[in-house]
Length: 207
Image (cartoon, rainbow, N blue to C red):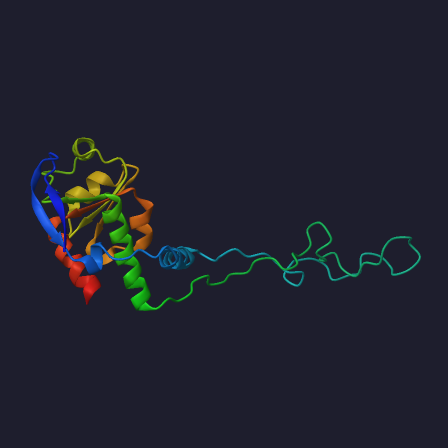
């Protein structure tokens, strides 16, 4: 079992907590993380790009000029892709970019991302993060004390004051344990986890 310091919001050590090595200190396989991040980003793509083909372009169906005798190249329609204002050949059409990965692979990838942050020394465990009111200034002040410029903060339960205080500050994101994913962990330099959330994460990724 690995251990990590537990700090308070004043950046003072208040104890230690043991971590399950299956979740926080397992072998990190970068190709698995790469596959899962690709899958997450592909699923987020709107896939709404669309162009008109020659049959979808509005316009006359009349032949622009007669076939022979004009000295011009043959032309059968103004909707041709080689004409300005004509249709697009092989243009994008609405599509679904998402693809599937096994559930076990996705679970292992999250544990690997958590492990990567621990092994890098970028895992911070806090005993609590309670704000009396929604105050962005207070949140920024605490982050400065903790020396965190870019962090994903994982909480065990809804924390409206924390979520709303941080939402307009670039570089920070608050997330419940249910939503923890590879992309958001790797997107932020530091991973801040509240102590009660440690047990939730271990339950989720060892089940």
